[in-house]
Amino acid sequence: MTVTTSRSAPTLRQQVLVLYLSTSTLDSPVVGWSRYDGTGRTTPTAGDSDEPPYASGVAALCDGWRLIQASPLFPPHPGSEYDVSFLKHEFFFERIVDLPGGDV
Image (cartoon, rainbow, N blue to C red):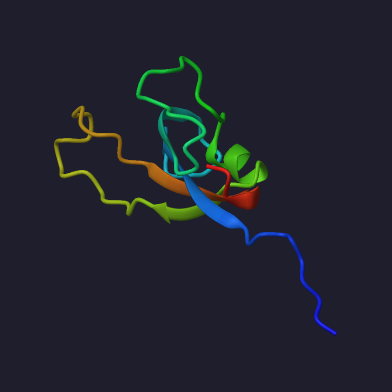
Protein backbone atom coordinates (compact mmCIF):
# COMPACT_ATOMS: atom_id res chain seq x y z
CA MET A 1 0.00 0.00 0.00
CA THR A 2 1.39 3.41 -1.00
CA VAL A 3 0.43 6.53 0.90
CA THR A 4 0.79 9.89 -0.81
CA THR A 5 0.17 13.33 0.57
CA SER A 6 -0.73 16.47 -1.31
CA ARG A 7 1.15 18.65 1.12
CA SER A 8 4.06 20.38 -0.56
CA ALA A 9 7.43 20.85 1.05
CA PRO A 10 7.84 24.06 3.05
CA THR A 11 9.64 26.96 1.45
CA LEU A 12 11.82 28.71 4.00
CA ARG A 13 12.95 32.31 3.71
CA GLN A 14 15.12 34.46 5.93
CA GLN A 15 14.24 37.85 7.39
CA VAL A 16 17.11 39.94 8.79
CA LEU A 17 16.89 42.68 11.40
CA VAL A 18 19.87 44.88 12.26
CA LEU A 19 19.52 46.84 15.50
CA TYR A 20 21.96 49.52 16.61
CA LEU A 21 21.72 49.85 20.38
CA SER A 22 22.82 52.72 22.63
CA THR A 23 25.23 50.45 24.52
CA SER A 24 26.68 46.95 24.15
CA THR A 25 23.92 45.32 26.23
CA LEU A 26 20.89 43.73 24.56
CA ASP A 27 18.49 45.49 26.91
CA SER A 28 19.63 49.00 25.94
CA PRO A 29 17.43 51.23 23.73
CA VAL A 30 17.46 50.99 19.93
CA VAL A 31 18.98 54.06 18.25
CA GLY A 32 18.95 52.81 14.64
CA TRP A 33 17.73 49.85 12.61
CA SER A 34 17.53 48.16 9.21
CA ARG A 35 15.20 45.42 8.02
CA TYR A 36 15.49 43.01 5.09
CA ASP A 37 12.74 40.61 4.04
CA GLY A 38 13.72 37.53 2.06
CA THR A 39 10.06 36.52 1.72
CA GLY A 40 9.38 39.35 -0.71
CA ARG A 41 6.21 40.21 1.21
CA THR A 42 7.54 43.59 2.32
CA THR A 43 10.18 45.97 1.00
CA PRO A 44 11.36 48.05 3.96
CA THR A 45 13.60 51.02 3.22
CA ALA A 46 15.77 53.27 5.33
CA GLY A 47 13.78 55.99 7.04
CA ASP A 48 10.40 54.33 6.44
CA SER A 49 9.47 54.62 10.10
CA ASP A 50 10.02 57.08 12.94
CA GLU A 51 9.69 54.36 15.55
CA PRO A 52 12.06 51.38 15.86
CA PRO A 53 10.50 47.95 15.36
CA TYR A 54 11.53 47.01 18.92
CA ALA A 55 12.51 49.00 21.99
CA SER A 56 15.57 46.81 22.65
CA GLY A 57 17.37 43.71 21.48
CA VAL A 58 15.71 41.70 24.24
CA ALA A 59 12.28 42.71 22.90
CA ALA A 60 13.28 41.31 19.48
CA LEU A 61 14.37 38.05 21.12
CA CYS A 62 11.03 37.83 22.95
CA ASP A 63 9.26 38.16 19.59
CA GLY A 64 11.10 35.17 18.13
CA TRP A 65 14.10 36.78 16.41
CA ARG A 66 17.36 34.85 16.82
CA LEU A 67 20.57 36.74 17.57
CA ILE A 68 23.26 35.71 15.09
CA GLN A 69 25.96 38.37 15.53
CA ALA A 70 27.01 41.15 17.84
CA SER A 71 29.75 43.64 17.06
CA PRO A 72 33.04 43.20 18.90
CA LEU A 73 33.83 45.80 21.52
CA PHE A 74 36.87 47.98 20.95
CA PRO A 75 37.98 50.59 23.47
CA PRO A 76 38.26 54.13 22.10
CA HIS A 77 41.71 55.51 21.41
CA PRO A 78 42.81 57.88 24.17
CA GLY A 79 41.48 61.34 23.43
CA SER A 80 38.73 60.16 21.04
CA GLU A 81 36.14 59.06 23.60
CA TYR A 82 33.64 61.70 22.46
CA ASP A 83 34.24 61.67 18.69
CA VAL A 84 31.16 61.11 16.55
CA SER A 85 31.47 58.12 14.23
CA PHE A 86 29.56 55.02 13.05
CA LEU A 87 27.05 53.26 15.28
CA LYS A 88 29.19 50.65 16.95
CA HIS A 89 26.74 48.54 18.97
CA GLU A 90 25.34 46.57 16.03
CA PHE A 91 23.33 43.38 16.51
CA PHE A 92 22.14 41.09 13.70
CA PHE A 93 18.97 39.05 14.17
CA GLU A 94 17.25 36.58 11.87
CA ARG A 95 13.88 34.95 11.62
CA ILE A 96 13.11 32.00 9.36
CA VAL A 97 9.64 32.18 7.81
CA ASP A 98 7.79 29.24 6.27
CA LEU A 99 5.90 30.15 3.11
CA PRO A 100 3.28 27.40 2.79
CA GLY A 101 3.13 25.94 -0.70
CA GLY A 102 6.05 28.04 -1.87
CA ASP A 103 3.94 31.24 -1.80
CA VAL A 104 6.38 34.09 -2.41
